[in-house]
Image (cartoon, rainbow, N blue to C red):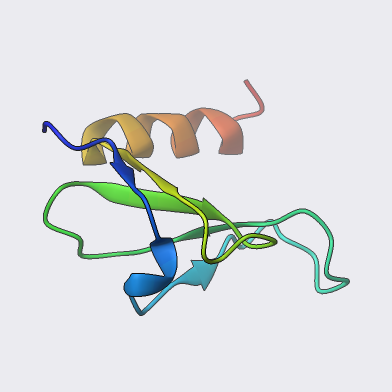
Length: 70
């Protein structure tokens, strides 16, 4: 994977909030499933800002660790 950022994340549709995000409008991350370059992640407070793109395997490992409390 060569591109690790998407300059304007709002150009993509289908974002979903993390299941760990609260509904009070606080700090949240959003992810986009099915992107060909990996898993884009953006700050929900800045939807027109950049998104970081993680390799799918790395993102899965990260989520597994978070769920395990590591």
